[in-house]
Structures are given as structure tokens and as C-alpha cells.
Amino acid sequence: MAGTKSDLQVDLEQSLHMYQQMAKIRAFEEKVNELYQSAKMPGLAHLYSGEEAVAVGVCEALRRDDYITSTHRGHGHCLAKGAAVDRMFAELLGKEAGYCRGKGGSMHIADPDSGNLGANAIVGGSAGIATGAAFSAKMRGTPQVVACFFGDGALGQGLLYEVMNMAALWKLPIIYVCENNLYGEYTSVGETLAGEIGARAKAFNIPAETIDGQDVQLVYMTMQRLVARARRGQGPAFLECQTYRYYGHHVGDINRAYYRSKEEEREWTTTRDPLQVLSARLIAQKLTDASVFARIEADVKAEVDAGVQFALDAPYPDAREVEQDVYA
Ligand SMILES: Cc1ncc(C[n+]2csc(CCOP(=O)(O)OP(=O)(O)O)c2C)c(N)n1
Ligand SMILES: [Mg+2]
Image (cartoon, rainbow, N blue to C red; front, side, top):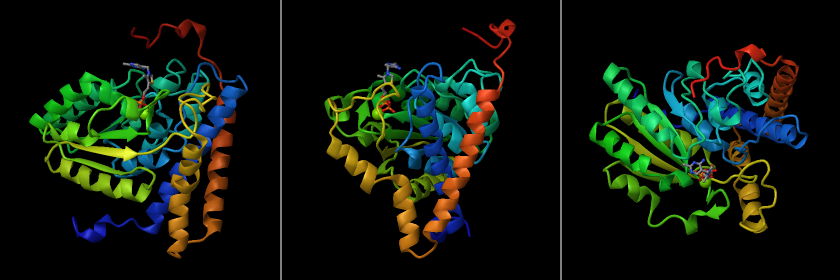
């Protein structure tokens, strides 16, 4: 029965699927770090480790033809929406098999087949693209919904407020998902943000909620509600997910001690780890046991190992294609 409370429970199969998605993102990011540290990957990357429950909980509530827009810290969003590990690695390594034929790299991965309109290196930049996509869905009369991911740093960008105003006025089917990981580069949100985060959305009469972004079941259930509302034509919503990045701002930021404490890192990585939160809960509820998680971990490790090997072996694009598909 649609809309009953029991619909909003997360069953075991779906919980394990979300665990598997989170474990895949974690394993992927660990491998990206290894590639960078061993100088096998050009450029750099912003790792999503620690924030997996946000991307996975949000994307679990979406259909394949719903849209997302992503950020500079976008690998988790791409994978959660359905991108393949091998083509992701290929893109990071500049290979032709990558999602942008090796010309985009870490911060520009897009995959229209899975509804991913792309990562974006301009902080806040994807808000305009996401809102345009929601406007397009409304004009075309499709039931598609858009999830727009952005970090706390994007709250300092004017574009976000211009598009939230439009989305509210035109009742666009979009969820603005703020990944508040407490830092923008090397500065704590306490030094950059005045007032409450949700109040910014409420100023446009957009309903806003703040939740624990380390609890994937909670993220999923909350998103399910907001997505259903948007699909019914009731307009946008704003979701602040409180989360934490385990590594530095990017893979080269290895000395974090001058801007955040070891105690803070320890608290988030031990008591609030999204994978452990979910596995401990399912075990405590006697729904499953530790061997199931061990098997999932082994499966995703095998997938990631095969994916990276595929990408390492894959050819670079032909040099004559250097200007092909390049628009600026
Ligand atoms: C418009 C713009 N200003 C500045 C930057 C440089 N920059 C890159 S990432 C970043 C911090 C973003 O912080 P946040 O939005 O909280 O995302 P997080 O890195 O924490 O995931 C900044 C300032 C940029 N890319 N774009
Ligand atoms: Mg941040």
C-alpha cells in the first residue's frame, strides 16, 4: 500500500545492498589514494571516504532516470547512481574507456545513462544545472526528480539562492542535498557560516531537514519521503546531511593537524563510521551476522581490483582525438 508507514521501513535485502554500495565506494577511494600515492594517476582527487551513506542513501531513493548533479568530491555520487567501477578508473587514468574518454578526469565525470549530469569543479556550480534539469522535467511532464549534491562551502555561493528561489516559485522536483562535512578546504564551517543552514531554504518556503548523514537507512528513508513529495508535484526540499571526510581536502592534503584535531577524527571514524553503524545495527537486530559483511567486502574488493587492472591495461585515446568532444 503506497504511502503507509511500513513502506518507509528498510528491509534486509535493501540494507545489504546499501552496505555493498558503501563498501564499493570505500574500496574504490582507497584504491584511488593508492594510485595517487604511487604516481600512477595524473592530477589529484577529493576522496569521499567517510561520506558514503549520503550518496548511497540519496541515490537508493531515486530511479535510474532521475537525475543527480555532483561536485568536485564526486566519485561516491557516480558509483551510487550506477556508474561502473572499471570505466570510472579508466577516466581517472586518462584512458579512452573512461566516461569522458579520458578527457574529464576525477572532477568531470558524467554518465547520462545512469542520470548523472556530471561532477563540477566550480563550488555550487551544479545547483544551476540541477535546477535547470528539474525545470526541464517539469516542462516535459515527466515524473523525474533531481538530487543536487553540494558541500557546506557552496552555501557561500549566490547561485544557490537564485535557483532555490526559482525552484520554490515554480514548484520544481528537486532535492538540494547539502553534505555538511564541517570543512571547506581547510576552514571549519564555524568560521564561515552565519546563522542556521536550514533557515536559508526556509526563507524561500522550502522545507528543510537536518539529519545524521552517517546513518544510511535514515538518509534513505528521509529521501524517499522528500522524493515522493517532489514527484507528486509538491516542489523542492532541502536536506542537510551531517557527515565527515576521513582524508584531507584532496589526496595531497596529508597534514590536517593544523585545522582539525586527532580526537575529532577518531570520534567520527570509530563511533560514526557509516559502514560500521549499519553492520552493527543489523547484527544487533539479529537480522544477519558478520560473515555476510565479510563476503560483501571480499566481493567489492575483487570488483575494484579487476576494475583498476582493466583501467591500467586500457589504451589511451588516439592523439588525433585531442580536440574531439572538447567544447571550451
Ligand atoms: C567557485 C569556486 N570557488 C572556490 C573554489 C576552490 N575550492 C575547491 S573545493 C573548495 C571547498 C569546497 O568545500 P565544500 O563545498 O564544503 O565541499 P567539500 O570539499 O567539503 O566536500 C573550494 C573553496 C572552487 N573550486 N570554486
Ligand atoms: Mg565541506
